Image (tube, one colour):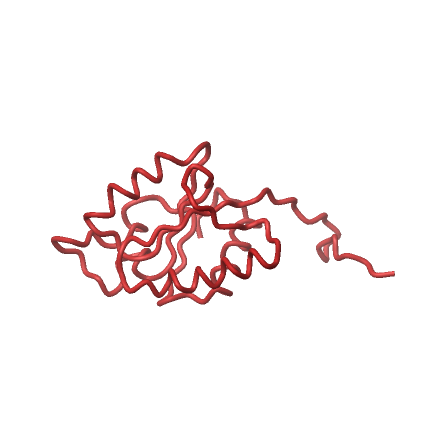
Length: 149
């Protein structure tokens, strides 16, 4: 008979995680991070994961931003944030979203959303691989969603 690994090595029961619904926004840049997230979303759907990407911010608990924040996209990000119900969390994925990356602040670019808002999760990389994003999300959830990493 096969046994499931239901316990940590210390004997504690694994935490039960509620589904994490993610709304992704690409705010400007090369779209490399968005392509990696697209690969991740396919894997999550096929694996029947409790982490999933949703098509509207009204269904989301986490707003995941990639790309540097442009002047034109800042109000759109704010509208998406306001449309999210209940407890709202923010994640900045990729160098551009964290600190602006290669896009210096100027007349059209504000820099990274990570420097303008309190993000629950900051994941640098250009672009981070789907495995790195998934690992960061899982690690962040097991540490506690209230802590910034």
